[in-house]
Image (cartoon, rainbow, N blue to C red; front, side, top):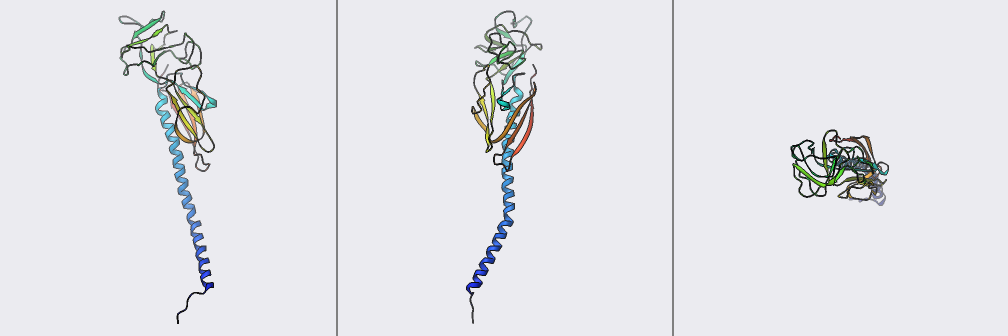
Length: 258
C-alpha cells in the first residue's frame, strides 16, 4: 500500500530545506563579498594609477621654476616646454641683444620642433610669481618672456620686440606652450581630477577646480606639494565608497634645469 507525505512532514521538509539554503547563502556570501571588494579595490587602484601615470608623463617637461600650487594643495599649474636651446651671444650670426629691443636671434643648434605662433620664449625663469622680471607668469612689461611671431625656424627665433631683462647663466632659452593646470575636486562619495589647458598665460593661477576635462573619478582626497623647485609630490586617495579606498604617494622630478 502506497503512502504519501503528510502535511506535517512536508512542512518539516520545507523548513529543513530553508535552513540549509540559508546556511549555504551565508557560507557563499563572504566569498562573493570578497570578490566584489577585490573588484572595487582594483578599480580604485586603476583610477589612482591612471592619474599618477599621466602626471608623470607630463610634469617632467615643465619649464624650470614654473610649477605653482594653490587651492590648499589641490591646484597645480605649470608651463610645458616644447623646445629648448642655446641662444647666440657672439657673431658671426644674429645674436640676442640684451641691451635693446630685439625681435630675432639665432639658435646655436637646431631645435627638433619649429616654434609656432601662440608659443612663448622664456629666458632665465627663476620663480613663478605673478610679477617681476624673472617669472614667465609675470604681467609686468619687463618680464622674461616674448611671444613667437611668424617666420621662426629651427635655427632662428622671431619674437615680438623685447628687451629681455637679463641673460641666462647657462645661455639657455625655453619655448613654452600655453599653461596646463591639474585641478582636484575631492568628495566623500568620489570626486574628480581634471586637466585644464589651452588658456593664456596669466598672473593669477586658475583656482576653479571645476575647470577642464575629467581625467579620472572616484577621488576622495588629494594634495600636491612642491617639495623642491624640481620635485613635486602627490598624495591621492581614490575609491569613493568607503570600503575600497586606496591612497598612493608619488613624486615627479622635473627634467629641465634653469
